[in-house]
Structure formats: structure tokens, C-alpha cells
Image (cartoon, rainbow, N blue to C red; front, side, top):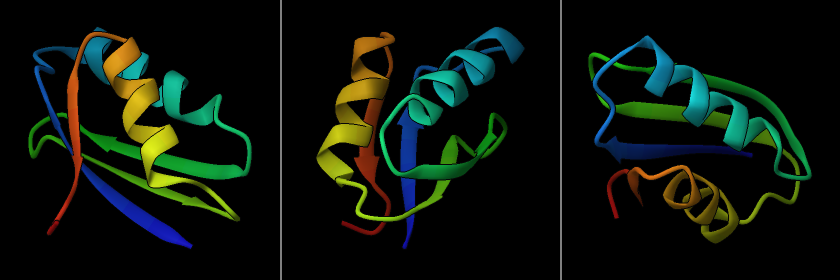
Length: 69
């Protein structure tokens, strides 16, 4: 399962790392690619809830929505 998020509020490499770490902490996530320039995060995993991903990003202080939603 692949999910792409639009992430707002990222301004630097630290932000990118924080979002990546938060997403990798969600059960079922296998890989994460965060793109600071485009404000996206691509997540691959099994049985991953988009809501759990969004909540993890928000908990880090950034905004997130499912891309295309």
C-alpha cells in the first residue's frame, strides 16, 4: 500500500527528518520518502491507516493531508 501525504510547515532538513521519523514510527510502515522541496511524504507499508500517518505528522507540529484528497 502506498500513501502520499501533502505536508505543510516543513522549512529545513530538521523538519524533513522529524516528519520521516514520526512516520516510520507507525506500525506497518516499511519505507518513507520525505521531499522537503515539494512538501510531500510517500509512505509504503501494509495495513497503514492514513489517519494514523496524518496524526503522527500533526503531533510533530506540521500539517498533513492525503495528496489528491
